[in-house]
Picture 1 (cartoon, helix red, strand yellow):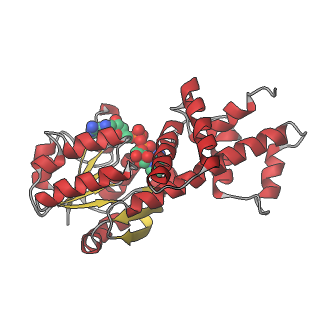
Picture 2 (cartoon, rainbow, N blue to C red):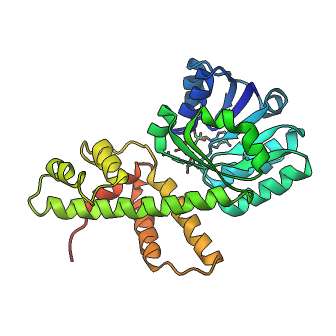
Picture 3 (tube, rainbow, N blue to C red):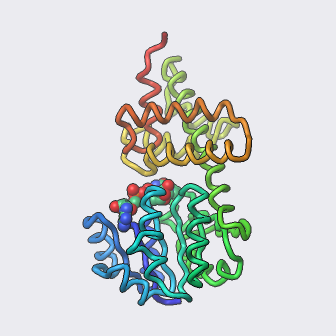
Amino acid sequence: MKNIGFIGLGNMGLPMSKNLVLSNFTVYGTDLNKKAEMSFHQAGGIIGVSIQKMVELCDVILTSLPSSNAVEEVFLGEKGLINLAKSGIVLIDTSTVAPELNFQIEAAARKKGIEFLAAPVSGGVIGAINRTLTFMVGGSKSTFDKVLPVLSTMGGNIFHVNERVDSGTNTKLINNLLIGFYTAGVSEALHLAKNSNLDLDKLFEMLNVSYGQSRIYERNYKSFIADENYEPGFSLKLLRKDLGFALDLAEKNNVELPMSKILFNLYVEADESGLGEKDMAVLYKKISEQKST
Ligand code: NAD
């Protein structure tokens, strides 16, 4: 496995693909955004290759795309991967999408003898840069074993969840449901602290060694809230997307999640107030600007 394709060179895809280049794979990348392609090219990646050509050249193609629609188009569209690829290639989607889409792609791939894994990731941009991402992979174990050296180049914790193709996605949605709660909890707690004459740096120092500590508190406070800089990161609108998928999963499985519904509405409101492109930590700003009634 030497030649790798990478589609979607955004906040996650760019550092992930750069790490493949650094590990001496030959990497062909593409993105709708030409600036992203240039950054990839400057890091030693090859650009200007059509999907048609990419499927001929590559043993494995990875995707990191922002929505189910984008993933559907790239995999199942007329000029998409499944239509153009031949048997023998392995396709891996690292995006977080609706679990049903994992099944649709797997079924289409199987008809053509193409192997497909749904492998969402956690760990954020920092994890992508530092190769410490967690991969939660659903699909064939033998395909997983085959591509493990490729995934290990980008992640520190690579899990095969089970043979069901949606198992990694379901794991990831539960992870992101927790992220949604932690982010909202940190936002409300810091809003209260600020209005209770507490210094937020000192508070962090104390709670970081107490049970109020969490990785999301550290991430959101240290990297975003403390400097009031909310450039993503992980955009609020992507978290809203994942919370929507988690609620759909709950409905499909007849599970009632009353708190999660309230949580989802909080993110919908923040997204619709124009904060969607900012990092999810911006929820603190939204909450701290709310007037009490
Ligand atoms: P992003 O918006 O920064 O990047 C997505 C890239 O895909 C963009 O550069 C966009 O131009 C490109 N793109 C869109 N449609 C395309 C198409 N048809 N063909 C080629 N390129 C196309 O998003 P991101 O933050 O990198 O997230 C990517 C995926 O990873 C999402 O599914 C997200 O939920 C997931 N994820 C993100 C993070 C994070 O911290 N940002 C963490 C874990 C998982």
